[in-house]
Length: 339
Image (cartoon, rainbow, N blue to C red; front, side, top):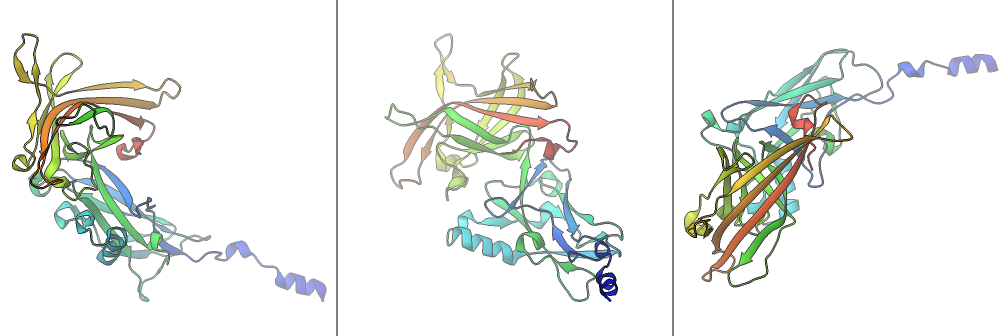
């Protein structure tokens, strides 16, 4: 009898499902609750980001499954209200339809546990004539849909069934620069302010923008103080190439290039320039370091911090950034070691 009971209680438990097969996004959120998606900026071109969709479980998927995906504006609204309250100028913005296309479903065939949702991004806008404005933070909020008629179950955890994709285009010069040698002088003061970091955002494939002076992306008036930096191929010498600085709110910030004396004692505009140097890592040859240095000299007025009493600033110095690439990784967006 004991033998019979023991034999009856034994079964091939490894053949049974240990974990229910659930459909989930693979989109790990950062500390802000969103997932950064880095894509190369191509004016007028399309870049595809493949968002993985996974089926969990301890046994193989035995049937074809159609995973349904939809835009989830409600979750984006909740995120904004909880993070920023009434400061709506800091809200994450819903990615406009002109900048992307994506299917409403993904097929995962029997025997497979991974599918991808292709998201085609056109960040230059229609025919490249309307570049995405990175002074706003763009989110594509997606959710896996649940319905009794579907042949799958959705993972109930919010970071698995939902994906808040923070679309972040990059070019050769965008990223986070060190600002320790970037000196910001208030008119009449001899002591300079500095910034630990200065973030540079994409405008197009050859242009970035930063915020003037001490401003950053958390200022409500940031759009009035964008400084565009265009990288030209015009050489000053074999090491340095010229930058072109400009702003789109001249009436607001009264921007101008700083002036100085040339070798002949003449007063001229100081030329902004950049330098790029690349080298292999000494210990890890597959790791490539790119060093970018920008020299900037400009002046502007801050007319919003103290209304009726404009504050004049003079900025001069260098911004520097190191970009590390793992050349063993084939996909460019994953090669770069992002902060």
